[in-house]
Length: 370
Image (tube, rainbow, N blue to C red; front, side):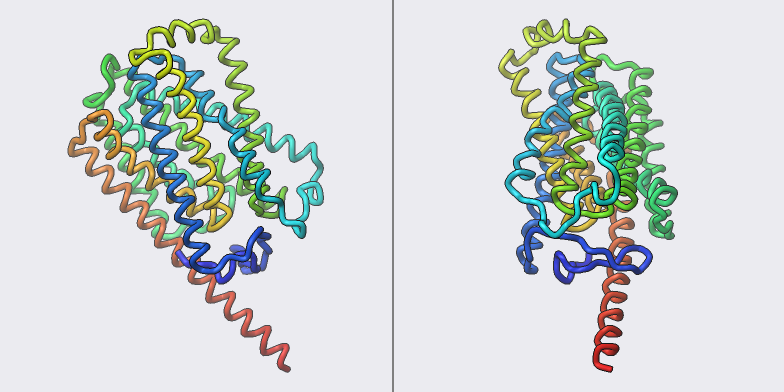
């Protein structure tokens, strides 16, 4: 990963043109590294804890997939804290400078609908899979991200990226044929297969969502600032939360929640705290995602998310005593190899961009001197 010459200066897009990334602060080298490190911690810790709490909810008697879906976005008010504390850059244009408010609203609503469906698939996946298997399958999102970025965002498909896609796809296939050897108690082979398919589908949709968000930044919002990236997280989450609440009442699952709380194995207080902290952890993860998108790139944010998914199986072995069989160890190593391939490609691209930027600056100085 190449360090930006100065956060807030002009950066190079994939076509070699310059775009301006407005910032709130002028950061020196160590301040930038500290912020990146803090956001990596938020993403890894938040995502790992949220997955473990989600599995804990099901293990201790929880059964509402719609409640599990709701808590993934219901903590969105937490994101208003950094949005209100850190003012928008006064020099940056508002989204309405590029497109109408109605169009922006349509983008947020559409993304929110996709997000709600994606969260529901994740909830079903975690219902039928162990936390470790679930996390390893989710690591395939990096492969899907490469595919969608190629078709939607016109990103290059290099040999290193192809290597990551093949390895991560093979990893998913290994877990698919592993059947239900480590499935939660009471889960049949059919349910294990449903959980596997739902988790793969959710990973694909999540990667599609990231590519669509990047497309919105490129074509509609035409800018990247901390506040705009936060809003891209907040407003779709509001829509997804409304949809989840509506589905909870329409399906009738809300009637079972009181009995679920009273029957929770570790008590009513534990039931409430599990849901609350799951919601908080997902939003802590979101803060890390937003911070890394702003400080580095959406690609780097997704790569770190994949690292968190590899940490998940280790944490689930400690917390839930999940079985760490040979297949899982192979898949974990393959996920790390795919991650390394992806990260090295990112390093190569950043190095080329930095070199091109230096050449352009040198040419500008020669023209000025003449």
